[in-house]
Length: 66
Image (cartoon, rainbow, N blue to C red; front, side, top):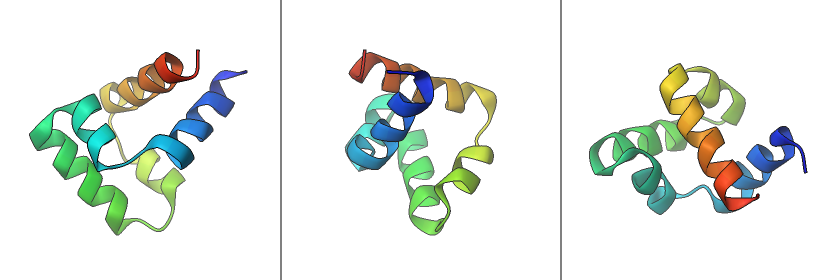
């Protein structure tokens, strides 16, 4: 499975408020989760994250779908 597929599966099947806290910690996780809820376009949401946050999501997707 390639990286893009892993990430897609993660965001559309596993991403939730619990995952946000697990990946980013309670405070930042709550902030990022609220931004997720405010966006109707998940790619726009992802594009607005900084590189460190993006990498954390990619790392978690790899961890779960490896």
